[in-house]
Length: 292
Image (cartoon, rainbow, N blue to C red):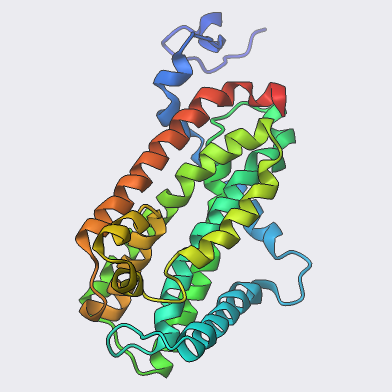
């Protein structure tokens, strides 16, 4: 006696269950595979977010303490001691805090993504998936910190009774720009870090040094006034100069204008670093499982 089993009108052969390994196939379908593995991206991002503040007393309060302390220190040093001016009628504390948000997002995203491949070594050596998911998902933790600090910015503006203009709606695009600014060098460095572990010591130094050469505690107009227009454009090769100036323009309004030439230079550097980072990462990721 045979049971009537459901069947499809289309016959199923053994070939339907074959896994085809075609040379160069991953290159042609790499970006599509990133979308197909979006659930893995979400899982890794949620894991990193939950682990970040696990077994901490203050929890997400650390996302508020660090920018607030940095804002207070820089306001005292640059605003009170050095006597540097703010932008327009904006309080000096708000001017500093507005710049602190993208800088901390950039620096923490760069640091986290550059260490992400080594941190996830067991996963890389056992499972196949587009490796770019790992550094990209690690940045999401930094984005959550950014959102928490952004709420504090709104409270700070309310306390000073400082209302933004229509420029405020440009912030989502600027956040994306900050993400891309960190992703490019992050991909490049994390690929290098797989083979040369020395870079884990270099990145914290570069981030700390970058804080002092980036217009976070002071306005970039100070650099233009002291160095002149030509040297200021050279200074704009630091990609975060244009990003921070754009953030200040979005929050402080037209009293903090963006120098178009400086912004274009910063955008060009971000695009170049993103291209170099993605290209180098794609060229070297096939050997990650063997090296790591």
